[in-house]
Length: 381
Image (cartoon, rainbow, N blue to C red; front, top):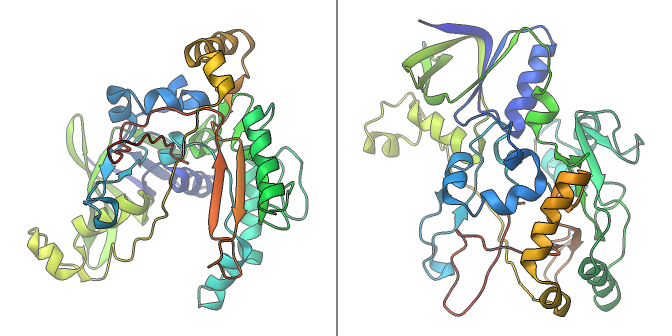
């Protein structure tokens, strides 16, 4: 039994939800597929719950693919965790909701290198269309979009002191809007949060969409792209009831993320020929799929303040949960990050090469293996 639509979108993460919604709004029929489950749980939708589900193995397994790198020679042979969302909204449903655009020069450099349509001037309309910035629409910011964006408020003393120290000691400018005219400087964090709720692409683009042509299916694991006559015509999937093929009359769109999309291409015979043959996969196209992956280092430093010792972590955490149940929009309804800065090292060129953050509280991150004698905490951004 086959299901079909004009478009089949593989992966309901940050890109997939937006693409599916936009296509369905045009009048096309769209089937959006997600291997994970629904995101209608407080574990996902309440921002402060990030500290819980990333530290309870059963919950983490439910929401995260649980990827690790190969052993890294420059990191004492450790395998570094690579959190990737396995739920509607993808990694945007399990991250810290740090709302940051790329630097303008990054986009302009891409366009100059031949990526037509990717200059900052080209991508700005999409940025503005996406967001509902609390400051309202302007030349550089958008209002009324599906993703609510707000500034952190009620900053802790630690975050206030951090801003002051970076500005005064390091000589970094204090800026009001790093997603505005200039990114470089230290600023209060912007978060895709509103009314005490996480605003993932699932919440922004899928909740109450009311589009008859848009079908969202969860618990669907895509095995491969079906290719006939050199053209992608659908996907073969595995569900709780068995295998099936979902056909695409127009296009198959891969939105399975930086790991998932290359993997799907290779499982479908599109990739480095020698590598595919090594795994018994028939070669459809010999292409360098999966090469040149770049990532950044996230180096957490944890300090215990005297006020934290006096206050005690457990009463503060329990009090937050109680206040959340009574009042709603407390710190449990915001990002765990409060401050972000973009600064240049001595080796930097025209662009900031370091992004720094301040979190008012920390928690153990079980996948963050540390060398003996150190403590390390981390949160997916």
